[in-house]
Image (cartoon, rainbow, N blue to C red):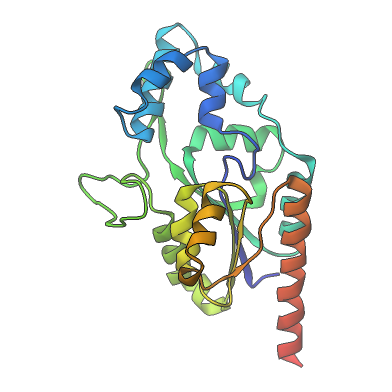
Length: 248
């Protein structure tokens, strides 16, 4: 469907794990992570953990190999391919980072299906160490959203996509899929013609259930990879049927 923009979260949505914690656990630095957890913003904490991995002599190639072990539910892969083949514009909005996301998607052969990945940027320095930076610079350009962490507002991402020329001209609709607390703000930004798919039992689902009056979009919960695939493709076909009916 050319009129549908599907925006996925990444951790615990496309993958059933948290990519940051996957790397932290793999390299045996969970104790340090727990010690620093309450003292640093998440984005800064992840960068600190990666520097700890490098300080132990581990390379970026070893981090990449670790990420290739992250499993993807087969139905998530088929859902992404099917939505793309139906003409949907697929994007990602995630508080992970570009290196982790691209490495995992490329390994599973689905990176090419996404037109845009909105996440924390990375840099590989002159010592070939991976560095992670915030999506929003809270000091020079704060996003001003009280629902979101200082370094990323996914609601702003939804607004930017909606205000883009291609979106306005195409009169497109959103389907937003996520699980975490950071997915509540973009859910609130959706309109009545849009759809939100919160993962049942996860923070965004609980927040939506407690604040349904704030969410204008139609809500379709999911729990497993096969359920995500079924509900996503059902919604895409529903939108397609509506567009066909309007043209008659």
